[in-house]
Length: 149
Image (cartoon, rainbow, N blue to C red; front, side, top):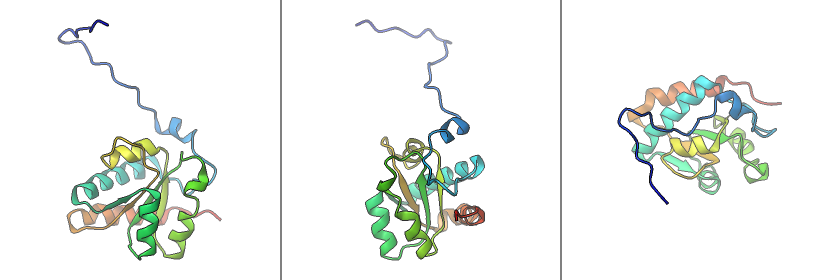
């Protein structure tokens, strides 16, 4: 196997990123309310800030455990998670406890925003004084989304 040397000034080959619309093609039927492209970017930024402060819960088991314990925050679910039985109970739990939740199109992007190499299907963002303004802005936008009937 021979290595190909890159010439100086030659652009690096990047993996093509899917657009928001392409990601929406893969979402499951229960992924409502879906965050807009703008809100999705805001949520990713808030998640990155929360990771720095270690104010994040990731994964179905951990998020479920802390919702049951009474923790508050924003629940962000990945819309392309299959089978949906893995996490279909979480929106009901959030509604029962008045916790705002929304879906975003990609679990791999959600995992990347959380600083993980693995895809993540659900994240709970807790509030913190370091990013309170961004958190409050996200909560307001998520609560403005229409809930499914």
